[in-house]
Length: 415
Image: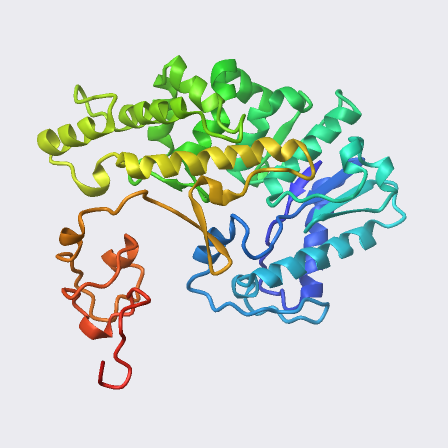
């Protein structure tokens, strides 16, 4: 059994000790019939790839670092988990509680949190892969650790019955893409007890698309790579089923080498054209399709395919994500820095580089304006949403907070 950290929210929860008691009750109920339990947690370190997504999800919540111990008060689970350091402390706290709870019991329990592994039995009696014998790992996300543990279970006994408890779609995709390396019995158990046999999903896709699955899934859009406005999973999956062998080969080659083969960018352009085509209006070149959709269907803005100067960075970020996923077969992965794939380090956090060129000539950008009256502070501001800075035509004038660092700011009535 493998599981991922889930947040349990009940009206009676008032302290971290009570939180851990509820957590252990749920773990016990889920694992009563298993001889081995493996529980994995995400890493929570500043500057990691997923930090931007986590910050966005807690943007409207005051972020306070709580030091976690038995007496730590929890009034709101959402507020309690808003700070990355609190999450890191909570995973360590829960890991200790789990191991303590199962100490001296016959069932074997392995917990992975931060960069360490803990077990209620000698680690050599639980894990099988030699690379896991050190008890250390550097994998950032819990879904990567699920794959690593599935590989270890397979290495120990190919006939093992493996149940994975997770509501994360990434876990389902990673299990399906790695099916040839994990126990054939592997079943994903989701919320409400829904059971998905990974072998059936793999067979339905077929070998060609199963090999292309990781590349396609990352490219269609994830928390870390960005997505296509107005194009949900259904649209992408339809295009995936229509993709020709060259496109599928391109997706299948994502993450196989550290350097992106140039031909992949061309195939991604063709896939995007397939995704955005309408009726008989189609092309395999993005600039031509953008013009046709604008001229014949009056499409504009986010209704059009992304330009090539934004598609290239998107492809690179998706490629890097697959590079990370493919490295989940080793506890200590060695991958190039994310900054080699159109990410940049800003104030200690990784931020995506969305475009390789300015969105328009400078003369046109100076004519752009928004209608904000509150200093362009809200995320609904069109300038801020598109990462564009202040111009003299902004509706908030000198009160604008969305300025370039070198623009003089009036702080005392004079400039």
